[in-house]
Length: 314
Image (tube, rainbow, N blue to C red):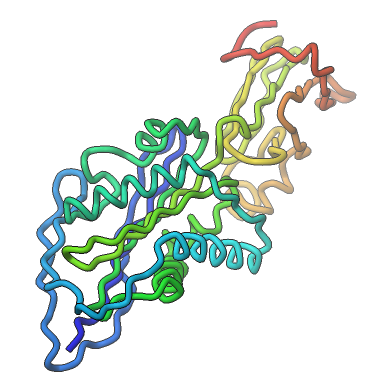
């Protein structure tokens, strides 16, 4: 009799300045037949959160063998179908990310382990080692086993469905700060397990870089994303945002206690104007009437664009 399929999952997010995050959320599995042998419990996680997978007994000789390249393609197609349903742009396949995903999947299969930091490396380190210059990196993992094996369609559907039904993985599938993906699906002939690795990333070249220049005679406060800045007079601050497209800057943001007591829509309504900046633009803050601030978004000619690092007086 077949073993009940198992589909443990792992999700990870890594961006510059953020802590590594992961979560283990196995989806509900169908009950096993009464006479089916139960898979033994995996060994406890090590210091990296990596688990040692138990023996499976292997597949039947007549087990289906999924076409791995086809499964990878279907995973990307299903990902983009899901993103489209949620009004998000599709992610495009990147060969370097795909190579990094396949290499890590092969390591998991060969070692019989499961975890984002298996082997002591992080997703960001692995994509960097593969030659990908990233701004944001996210990773979903899953493994599946069935004594009767898998067809490519079933394997891909189980991977993506499991990720959709798990909050952490779903967040990676629907991330707005990624534009590229790479998928690696690896089969371990000895155990019969299939490992699916999906990387999401925003290349460093797509990051939005802009400046905020304070030409008033007083410090000015503004917010970019969830972070608030106070810029002294006659200073310029350079920002790099790992977000494709324009970045919203809120001037004189309301304190958390304003309106509803949280930083939400009502708090923003009590703040100053919100401006959108694209890469290379400069937000100039000038003194306005009645002591206010008169903002201007300036786009320098391409040949005059200069990169400035950090906060410098001007």
